[in-house]
Image (tube, rainbow, N blue to C red; front, side, top):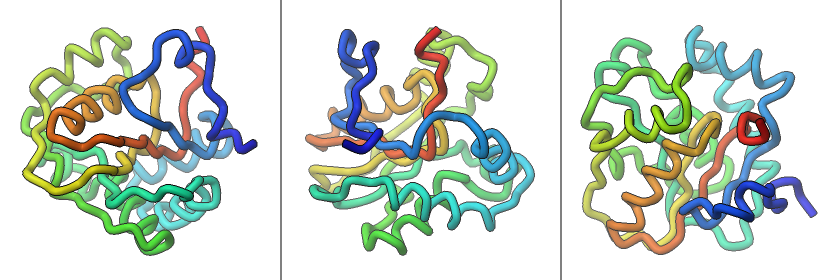
Length: 181
């Protein structure tokens, strides 16, 4: 059984809104080195490497219709020069043959960075921050670099379900161990 098929105790007790989470593994070496270099140092050449690693761990027996990157607000996208989830998604789409749709979700509210916020603060921070465009999808993969508390993935999954999508998978390079503490 692949690691991505195991369900943690927290998720067994309080199931998240998404149907499945697939990650390479925990936020441990080498990911604390690679992900910040991609995200904050602009080393976008790492995106295809991370996409290949993720693709090798995905169970694609029931593939989604599209890969949906977690969006950045336009200002943060402009400041950073790219969206790391979109860069990973572009490469992942080429590898898997699943199209990338970067227009389905928009971040319409600028919010403080989530990195130093608690789970509750993250949830409050994200209220009203996103919008879903019209679509015909039934099954999508929401793509992010790291799942920390699940606040972003949870908020976006609920919006996607409200828009008519019946199955949302969350794909990420890794997850943190914060949920264990």
